[in-house]
Length: 155
Image 1: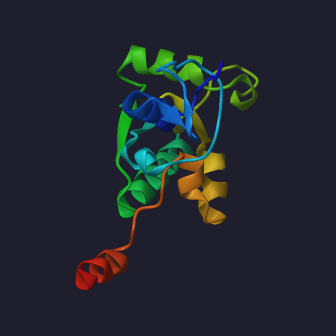
Image 2: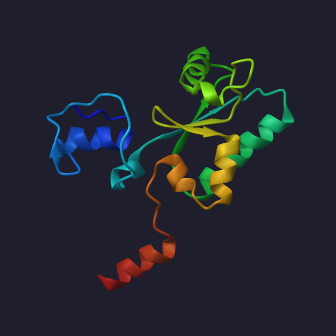
Image 3: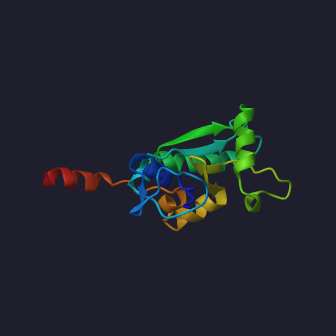
């Protein structure tokens, strides 16, 4: 039985019923497989933030993540954990145990691709510095404006 965790694989199965040339008969369970596909560009990145944060360090980290995503034209949604108990509870339940601090309560920002955990600020920062942000987010890199213009010129 094939188990799928990656959101883009679930979407691929839903659309075509196949993954890597194998027919999976629409089964969509949990597990993990593979790397991003073009469908991943349509996935929604969720950034869990606290709009009312008492810590300037948390505010700066949140601003850095949001600013970077906006500057790189990456679609995302901000999920406020300060004003929405459901968002706070969902984030706390879905951050893996090894990423939680000793007190068990993860601090924002926390980043997810749909329901798939990407990481916290430190993981985001490392991926950004290593020029691996699209891999970190589970997305296919967007073409640059220059590449888009060249492709239009060839047609």
